[in-house]
Image (cartoon, rainbow, N blue to C red; front, side, top):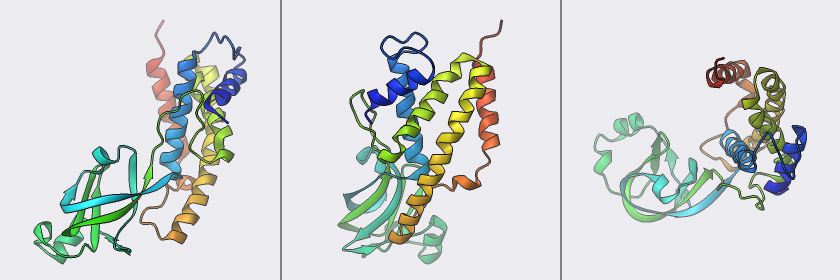
Amino acid sequence: MTASEIATRIITRIDDDPVTPVSVSAAEVLSAINEGQDLASLLTLCLEKTVDFSLAGTFYTPRPLFPDFLVPLRLSVGGVRLRPSTIAELDALNPEWQDFGGTPSRYCTLGSNFLAVYPQSAVTAKFTYAYSPVALSSGDTPAIPAAYHPDLVEYGVYRVRLKEGAQQLARGLGNLNKFLDSMQELGGLVRAKSRAARYDVQPFELALFDRSKLIDEVLKWQAKSTPKR
């Protein structure tokens, strides 16, 4: 489905006219679709790519080079994968690791924009990472697997109903749960594939997540954003 087809389904589901909607704007619906796809990519790590990554030191900030970067999945040099480590492990391995030359064998990450490689060397690595998709325009097709495009409808219905008050919010939470159920399924498929590929990071285990906490946060957000009479 294209983003415009998903938008039509969302507007129809909230009992509005998809040609000339009254309760929601086209921009709001498209924003909800993009938000749903971003959340899907973050929860499941279903989108990945491999790029050349020039190494010429120890410390790097990947996001300026790769703005869609989420998490590293594999880093390799000359066909040999680097072992993921922590800073504490590198400190224990070699107190001078931050200024030590040689063939890269390990890497570590912190937060969303810090990567260190040990030992340092001027080589080109192959960098496989999970990425977030570019924002959709109305005629674009979502990057997530086609089987899960209908779940962007569920998320979109939930998202555009948030502004309508408690009753519509309660209905919308059912749509959110359907979306999360599907992301749990997709995450499981990606996890199996990632294990087979021996990736360094696995998708978030949504089955272990207490959704009641998420619902509580949504309700608190709604309460704060609802104008007082």
